[in-house]
Amino acid sequence: MAHTVRHLNTSTWDAFAELVKRNNGIFGGCWCIGYHPECGRPGIDHRVVKEQRVRTDQAQAALVLDEDGTAQGWCQYGSCDELPNIKHRRAYDKYAPPLPDWRITCIYVDRRHRGQGIAHTALEGALDQIVTRVRQVGKHAWIVSRHVDPA
Image (cartoon, rainbow, N blue to C red; front, side, top):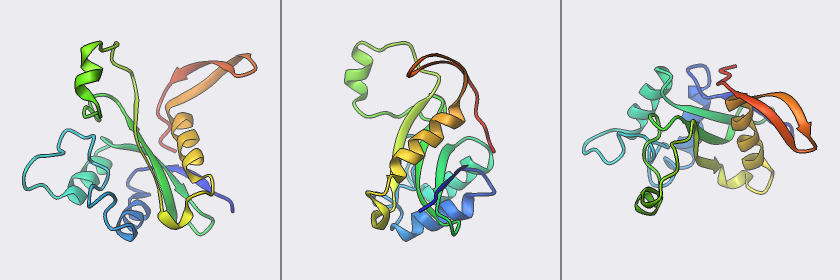
């Protein structure tokens, strides 16, 4: 099955929202805001928060679409400002390294499409959106530059 990867933005919001609805809100209604700063605030609507972040370019993800244009998975990434919440915070902060430019915080695949390489495609798509390979210097080594390709 052929898959394409698209950046999560206003043009792909409906496909993302349909995937989340089809999977009962993902992880109990998270809508993949668990790593955003709004998570845990009382009274917020996770869907509204995620949509607002997407429409204001404050949420990044590589969305994997099947040949019908239906979203089957994604890989969320972003800056530390966009995604300040991380797991194991106490252990991380104990000997914290310098803050990274990017974090990959969530990879999700529709439960009926697992085992088909969608997670791999999503991760590869996120990395392609984050970096540009400038020059190969070894079999598996590249000089890269940072960017986000919204295409």
